[in-house]
Image (cartoon, rainbow, N blue to C red; front, top):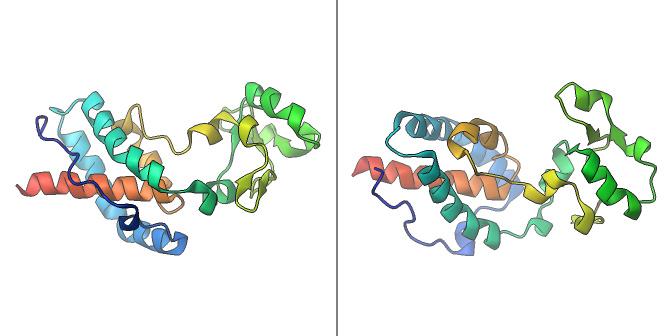
Length: 184
């Protein structure tokens, strides 16, 4: 398997599922497939973490480029946004809200984080657009993150499949390509 390319055919934008209701439904239907994917990646130690990360990056890049997050913003509507002090310093000059009214330190400490936004959906989300986009928290800048260490973070990534069209489409594409390799 280590010498086989997973790049496969290039998908068109129309090949990706972006309807949030459909993604939620399909992610639940394919949950076992995602677990099998995790098992396949764990079982094949002949494939290095770097190879897996390279495959995932090659699959994720065109999907992320094809899917317009401003048409979705589901992550901003549903996920907890954890913050660092640097995040707060970055966005505090551009917000009119006192930080203590929007940042929860107590619940964040329970998961070893500095802070998190108290409100969901995000208080800075307006019409599926981030009003502090240039100053947004680092976690928002990186979401969704697949690499490094895809093999070891796959279970956490899978939790995002019902929420994020990019995550769902990356996992489905990767599963299909790896499954095809094993059928050969």
